[in-house]
Length: 443
Image (cartoon, rainbow, N blue to C red; front, side, top):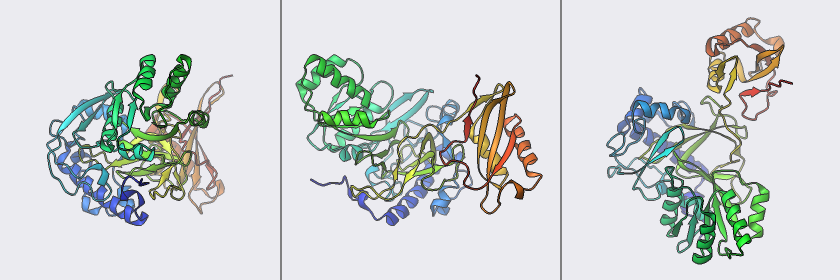
């Protein structure tokens, strides 16, 4: 039995990096031509200039929080899709399996819209008839699913694409699917006992509920020996409980917009970045990549030509891990979900967003990193922008005396609120992805 889904997983890292940069450039060119929303977003950008990771980092970021507004202005998908019945008549590139090896360069057949999904917001997502549209087969394979298996799919089939993600990946692998969805626990337990599926797809908490209900009813669900879980945390204790019942559970990180982003191949060893995306970790609220190991916001460019999201900010926090996985896959790893990047706070009746702090930093190059701390002082909200100076600038004693007032004025202009400014030496701020810290205590 082969250990890898395809040869892309074991590519030389340098060869992969070059191929993915070329694929992102091709995707940008494709999006400019076939997705009218991206024709506007990328106006003035020549895709031929996208020749490095640094060049990709200069492209505009599209935030998930902006999608609802974009879609209201240009229904149904904000002009970001390249589908026949969606935003534009467009052509397809290669299957997601081959993304990262030049996907988007060979435009073949017009993408046929197959599904329109709805997520809270509301935000609407397209899906076409493309095989394994969300590239879920790769994560399923890493979790041990193989052709001929029967998979019990307990992801939701109601409006959101989770259930369809699992189905498409299973079918691409050659697995049969029990389309269970959520709820009706007793019926699901009986179905598992009768049909004897090999594996489970869904949230870990629902698998735990199924196992508990099966024990209560003395139903035999022992045929399930593997699980691919997503949608919520998988604590070590829960994973251990599954293992004690003979179920090897691994995680996938996916979103309704992007499909698969990263997946586990070894428990508790980080998530391997999918071959069909280009992933960056950037400063929350901004677009500048952070140093490896530093917590930041997950920004993804998907190489799916039907919905060519470019530098799509997920709002999730994570960090790159050093070195490759012990399993032999050579793509980069991330630590998994470490929280939300949207640290919006309400101060004196006004909302303050991480993107506003990013604007302040962009106007003052002497600031390397910053954190806005909000506390309760003198019976009122107080904001303090703690600024880490650029390397070599030293501490507060070496700062231009006019700089604190200038920064405070910028904060007042951008945030419409007053703030104090403090300076720290390089390295004093924790590298935990926090841009806005709400430290208010009202005792």
